[in-house]
Length: 152
Image (tube, rainbow, N blue to C red; front, side, top):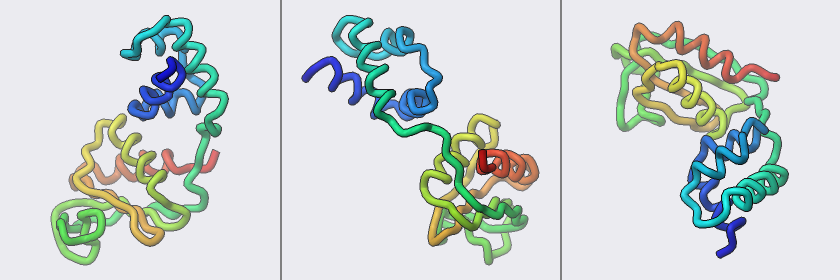
């Protein structure tokens, strides 16, 4: 396997690096040194540059969405995404409807993680994205999700 093939494989195994390459915010030399690939660091950096040129632009939006906070929902393994919007409970849900898909869920989960908001459950089904959070985290989670899914 060539250095370029090993580099691509390493990037595909590292979603953060993949996203950074797509967004154009990578120090290629530093990234090359951080990857555990046998080969010259400059060759790996060159492979990263070439791979980044082939990737689609990282700027994405969920499109038109509506974001809503739902208090007093239940967490239920039998419900889609583990959040039962129709049963009383002590969790809070952030419900997003509209142009949502698993990529939107990935965005939401990542931004909630970086905001230090614990996600208790979540998923996407039939045009609805739902994440469950602790009751007290609801308002901040709502703001974080709205910002994450804003159109550029």
